[in-house]
Image (cartoon, rainbow, N blue to C red; front, side, top):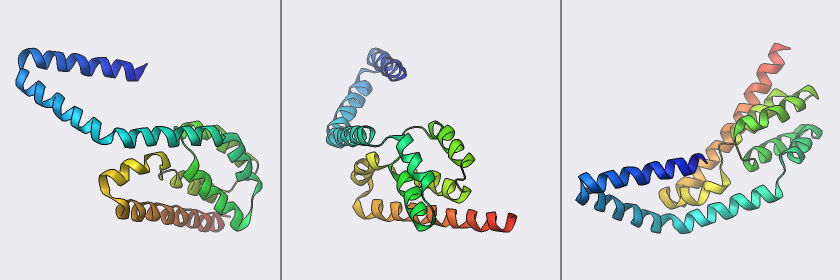
Length: 161
């Protein structure tokens, strides 16, 4: 519903522009059309990837795997779960809280949340705007940053205890 309101507001603004500044409104509409044509294949791919992730990745199952693993496997699961998870971050808070009560380490939680910065469904758009090389390098840095964050939290936990 929020998206519909936004759409109607934009349509209303364009209508007002057409009345007071018809030439500028026409230019803006043409630019919008060109941009939509340019990114529509990417948007279709993003919607498709999002649908696949939503269909096959269940947050509750993902969180169960996260709580059962330990050692290197736990780090791999936490990193993978962070990359594959989607939706708003606050939706994960209750699940992570339950896992923390069952012994999930803060280092894995930190790594999970940091790795969520990799947005698989948005990768095609990022590649379209910034190129493949930049996208790969940035996402590798995010993944390395996630691991580093987990290691730092792990060291701080050991000092604290």
